[in-house]
Image 1 (cartoon, rainbow, N blue to C red):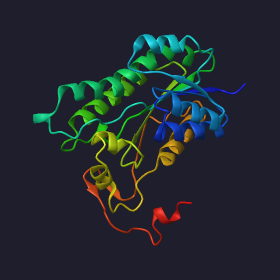
Image 2 (cartoon, rainbow, N blue to C red):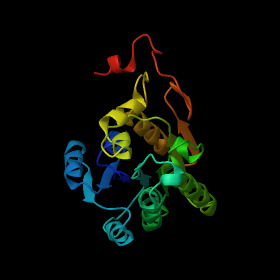
Image 3 (spheres, helix red, strand yellow):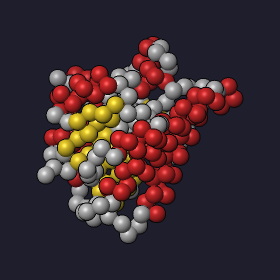
Length: 256
C-alpha cells in the first residue's frame, strides 16, 4: 500500500510541482486547494485525488480530515503575499488575510491531521515558509510577519512532539519564479511582477522546491531536516540579487 501525502495549495506553482514529484516517488497524493478546476486537471495528470478546500476554514478542514483513512505526509504550501505596502500605509485587512492563509491554514491542517500522522510508523509535516521568515525587507511587512509566525509554529511543534514519530520539516525558499506569486502580490500588475525577476539568470523554479520537499520526506525516518534554506545562485542574500549573466548558457536557454 502506497503512503499517503496531502498537499495544500496544490492548484499551481510549488504545490502542483510537489504533487507531481511525490507521485513519481510512489505516494498516493491528495491535493487540496480552492480552485477545483485546476485541481481536477492536476489529479487527471498525476492519478492523485483532488479535494476543494479552503484551509482557512477550520470546520471544512476537519470535515476533510475525517474522509481520510491515513496520512503519512502533510505538505503545507498554501500561502502567498498579497501586498507590497510599507507598514505605515499597509491595509490591516491584507495583513489579516496574509496571516490567515499562511499561518492559520497551516495550523488548521496540522491540528486536523496530527492524529493520523502520529499513528503507526509515524509521519512527516513539511511547512513551506520563506527566507522572509528570518530576514525582513522594505514593503514586505505583512508577508514577512506571517512567515516568521509560520517558522515559529514549525519550531514550537517540533519541540512539543519530541519523542513522537512525527518529523517537522521547514523549507524556506528564496526567489522562486512561479506564474502567480508576484502577480498576486502586485494585484495583477504584470510589469511590476516581471520586474522582480528581470535580469536574474536562473531564479528557482517550482520544480526545484518540489525536489527539496521530495528529498526531505523520502529520507530515512530517523533523519529530520529541521530547516532547509534554498536560494538561486543569483540571490546571495535577501537584499543581494545579481541581475545579469552568470552561466555561459542561461537557465532560460536550457529549458526544454
